[in-house]
Length: 297
Image (cartoon, rainbow, N blue to C red):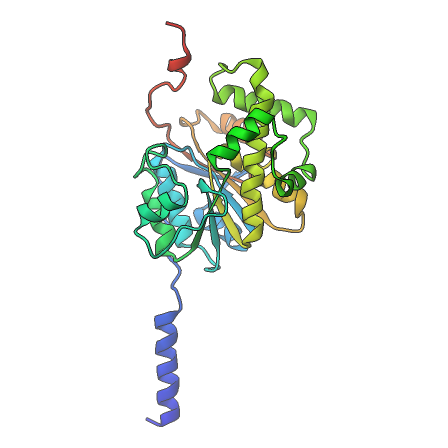
């Protein structure tokens, strides 16, 4: 064998060793469904992965206490291309980088992750996938101290850079009403009326904080609760208003009991138009009623 052929063989072997091999993504479980909201149709996980790979900014929602949602998003991250993707997490303070040299729990804690509050190891599979993929992981959320100030000032204490993002992304009256309703339902209709302005200010400031970090690290993906992933009210709305040229994808991970028929399914899906790009539906998880603490005894 000539030296030239040996060199080519060695180069080919080196390429095989060093180039990441795409991870085969899981199929849908038999009791799950994945919808493309814009098409109004069921799709395959590979269709979602293709859309994510082409996006500049993606937002992957979650129901915080559903382990299946964290596992599915972990699999998406492991299969993601391009590999220079930056991950931003609601679960950590804005701008804080999880140090890859530290053990994972220590790196998360140093970046503001509250292990008790987030029921660790509930999210471990998700953050293990970030580390396995060697992706940079930044916090996106307002620190608790800033959140308290935003609440007390009803938004007046929001930093100038975040205010600039919000000025470009105002919510009209209809959407403000929707956001108020979502906050009300999320707090079991137990909030006093005089708290809503403050709560809306906090929600918008947190969304702007996450949007800001995403825009600083393109291409990027946000891991956050579904409330932040809404295309019409949350982080994607702020991204679109400020950088309309960017390709963004919003994915909600929801729970739903089996649909009785196709008509019921179609009606349900139509109600999500404009609110997300994809919805991954998993079975409802059994849990205690979160509103029980608010009920009168």
